Image (tube, helix red, strand yellow):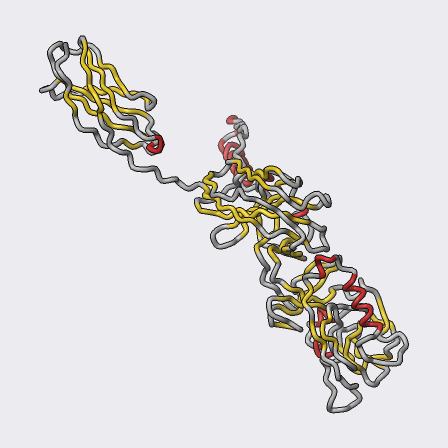
Length: 481
């Protein structure tokens, strides 16, 4: 049951002496109660918010997608070539609150507005260095072009360039005056000024954004204190899953259990699960399983990266033929053994079980996993049975008022449940029927007439398909003595 609970028996008491109106009222109340109970989600299959790959990102607008990464919350301002500083298969993330990395001068000495080697660049490098080693691998470098000049009325001013030399592989960086001017005011507006990387009015000033979100390209003296608000490009090529960052719908809320949990698309602030070469899992037990809903599936594995910390698990998802994630579960926290789960409510299809070692890192950090191992699951599919072959009678022997009929047993693959034997006196129309279990291959027929011959035929029966084979050739016995 995915959406419905088990039906509950509720006693109904009707006091007839009060009249039909009271009876009708009570019956209507009971009907409403029963109806509401039928649609209460069952706790075993409560939904979590997780989906394969990445969602459709809303960028640079009041309800832009919020992403948790590196202990902070970020807002999406570019994606896959669209929006601010966007590149292929990446998102551009800007610090959401604009304050959690603190304040800094652009240049503490106040003697320059060149970004390379500045105090602000040092703050950006420090913010990047606060990331975990695994999260650093998801940062996509960006080249910042140098040669920008001051905005003192010169026609050569370019609001996207930095003063001084360029930086070829920046990790975290401040927005330029041009990029900040593209922001929706719901994102650029903060309760403090924040630095941009573009030069200001003269060599001693740099551009910034003021309280109402307006970009001031004339800026202020570079030794002033302003908020450090980094942006960066995050590579999505190794992202396997997207999930809710926190709350009842997060992966963290799922316990180690044989009951997988159903999933729905992620909403609210999200986080990613990305593949990492530092996480491992070995499994050679990858043959097709033919199962039905409610069956227990056990898979042998070894070498899981689970011993290092309490937040490491052997986990799985089940996807359909379109790759949509339907169920998720944490199966074990042991480095080797058997990962077991009950097959959840599913239709009739060949699904994919994806098994991986997973590191879950809390609400504000990226999760990581090993490369998934795929195991096909044929769920609730009727396995075709071979056509029942016509049997044959191998021998009929006669003795005093009886005959013994022997036949060749059907192959085990035929899944025969029993044999049906019919016999009659030669020249008579009426057949007499006998049944024998499939474990036997002979039948003794007694109380026959001396001197008479008997015709015998046989067929097989399969209970699982409720089907019979064709009758064998009729065989004639010798005269009974």
